[in-house]
Length: 395
Image (tube, rainbow, N blue to C red; front, side, top):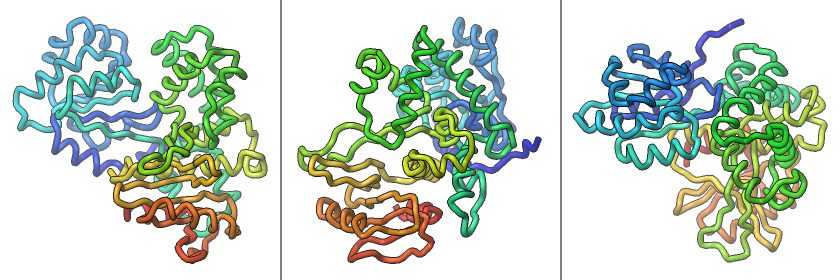
């Protein structure tokens, strides 16, 4: 099994953060490669993990002594297990603000951790998110990749173990879910009925790429709406799912206010949906939603990996006008419609042109499998999904 390190696009962003801030926090879901990345690019740092029970107990019992006993500079892995350290990290950082990169922390985006970081380390910490591999990181740049080949990769997913290191897909995702449910869910939110929570995740998977109707999910899962909200917050903060918010600024009150639901990894999503092969995934009813899920996550990965300055939304209103993505830079927007296929439908072009009238400074593109990047209509152009990175860097 090949465990050769695969370079990450976010390396330059993190290296700059270490030069600019006394504390750097790397957040991300389990198994995205946070520890591997830091050991590779900062081999001179002392590395300690709070995943170890005795280390965690020491850090929680006497955080000041814990920090004093460590060799600097220091990587503290899984900081969410000992938030008691945060006030003392602030004290250490304030002793000499000219010393940068003294502490590097890793952890999940779980809400108590992030609120603690915001309160304790404001102005002292750079927060960076590490997603699973982007398509280019995992599989390189390939010309003329077919739909079948693409869905083989989407089925495999983008966590380092299955995408790069050859770990069996079925075993990896089964183990990943079990570890997540048994460790994170039980510890973080005291969910006692794990089987109900797992059924809840399966209900969400069937709605990937769709508007999130919490009342409907509560009814089908046999739980209350407050429970659904609590469980969604947990899944979002631990980065199993991503909720894309609707664009609402400077637009009429007719806009839909419900978010759209996506999963952080297409391989995990395919596993939860129980698709046996990439071919059944491509020919199945979820193929378009899964492709859209993939594109949304690629945009998020590029924004984080390259520290790009834009917000991402979708748009939909009560008049039936909608577009999958609004890349918003404040003064201008880029509207994206995502289509699995090579034939651009004139109705999709007309739809984007109509929505552009709501966004006076906008550009518009249809992201598809069509390799011919040509204009459609007066203001809409077609771009191949592999050209998405070039478009994002412009923003």
